[in-house]
Amino acid sequence: MHVLSDPLAALWKALLATRCTADRVAENSSSGIYALFLESGSLRGIEPSADGLLYIGKTGSSLTARNHFLHPSSGFSTLRRSLGAILKADLDLTAIPRSPASNRSHFKFCQTASSA
Image (cartoon, rainbow, N blue to C red):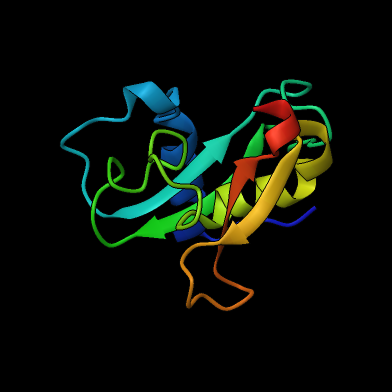
């Protein structure tokens, strides 16, 4: 078992203590480190760690601006693009370029026409 250093242990404790649902992210939240947690069995094909940790990220703006699930575009969220790639077949998603000039690493998802 890995033992966290004091600063990491404090950060982990703070992340666990401030968990909330995506729709309750404080509007006045500031920049910093954030974590996304998932209840076991709530998303088929994805199994988080025992404590529910799915993703740790950093924002230079605010958590409201980085709310991966309330933002209208999936193309700018690494988390949503990763989840989309894993769940692509289950959700009947198609990866498309974010813009006509985008390269292959700049994509977003849309539902396939057969499921729309």
